[in-house]
Every structure is written in C-alpha cells, then in structure tokens.
Image (cartoon, rainbow, N blue to C red; front, side):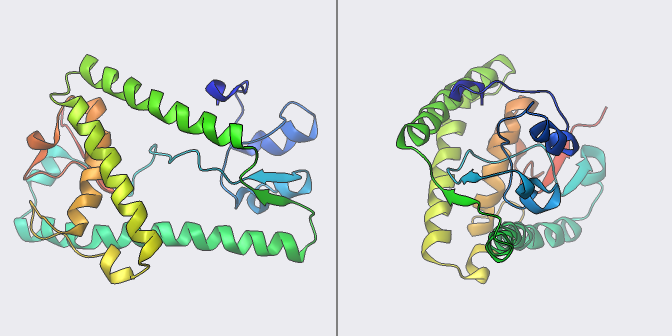
Length: 225
C-alpha cells in the first residue's frame, strides 16, 4: 500500500471501525464481507474493486515433515485428492460472500458504490506487481532458492492459466479435479505448484526438491527440527 501512496497504520482489524470513526484511517484494504463483519458499512462510502492480490499468511492443513513422511502413500493420496476441490470450494465461498454482502448493502440502502476506481490506480497496482516479482526473485536468491527466476515465471504463468479457466468454465469438477498421483500431472497438480512455487521462497527449496513430498497447496510441509 505504501507503494501506492498510502501511509500504513499499525492497527488490528478489530480496531478498524474505531479508527475510521475517529479519523485515524481514511480507508481500509480488505475483503468486501468486512463491510458487514466489522461493520464498516456504517462509514464507508465507496469500495474500489481493483484486485490487490492474495493473502498467503494462512493455511488449511499443516504437516511437520516427519509426520508427513510417516503417512502411507494411500493416506497422502487421500489428502491430495481432496485438496484441489477444497481450494475451489473456498474460492467459491469467498465469491458468494462478496455477492451476498453487496446485495445486503443495496437492501439496507447504505449508499456505498462499488467500482474499479481511477485508471491510474489500476496502473499503479499493475506496476507494483512487476516490482514484486523482482523483489521475490531477489529474496529467493538470498535464501538459497535454486531457480527463483524460473519459479517466479512459472507461478505467474499458472495464475494466468487458472484465471482464464475459472473465467471461461465454472465447472466445479474441472477446477477441483483430484491430483493424479503423488507426483501428479493433472489440473490439481497445477494448484499445488502455484502454492509450492510461492512457499519455496522462504524454505530455500525449489519444486524439484519437493517432489514426492508435496510442499504446497493448502497442505504445507514444515521442515522438522
């Protein structure tokens, strides 16, 4: 946000309402359902719908490396088969929540407008995304990643691929197709690779080092001590 000209404020999400009420905050970067949850719709007048990216600070399933290796192939496969559909369900739930809250805003006549905002704002977000790619590559090199350039480009390509798929085909079975084997080649494997390529910035590994012991998707492999 600082790159877009904003001044970050160190407040918890539960303090946003009071922050806006007292003039400490001019705006909030968050999800649309926050309008109801916190409830910011008492004060917010407009929502800029330009996508700012995704939040990678939480996971659905965590495994210690030793615990993961202690599972049988069948047990691992059971988890992997269900993760792509779980990821798809979560994404759909977020979309549904957005639509529900937007409709409630209209029903309650809150007077909030939704839209992409000015063109220069979207251009600034796109420019920052390019800088972020270079920053991530540099961080990967510093932390010992073997192929950070290739990993970053693969990550971007996979995100683009799946953005087109979900825009053109909303088939739940297509997007949630199970992984084909522990080293699967199916559509589910792409979803795992997207997260694996992202996670490997901090672990100093690359995708090749993770094969056979998946690092990614909603399941994170945490090196044992």
